[in-house]
Length: 139
Image (cartoon, rainbow, N blue to C red; front, side, top):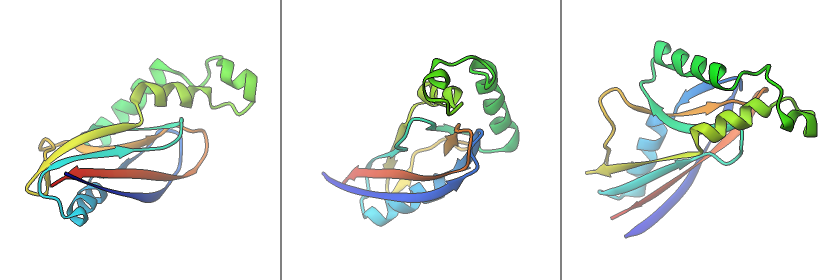
């Protein structure tokens, strides 16, 4: 068993910007040279999250709308009172989504469902440059 760790950089618009990471993740698994194992995709920070979804406009919009209903931007957040950056909602949303997913792979191929893609959702209230850590464990 060996470990290969790398990262990808991307720019995000914030405000629930959702980006498909699947091709980049598959490429890093291929670059690892491992045939079988798991890959973890992790975003450092507390205002973005990683999940899987069918990356099509309707499903992405539905997820975005769900987060707006669960943790609306215009609610009162103690974080906003303390720090004044007005992104308390983004911290709540990111905590609910989580910072990472782990996906198995066999024969160098991610074992995702037919319509399932790995995505980053940036909840912050401003554009951001993000780093996504990709760690592959395999043989």
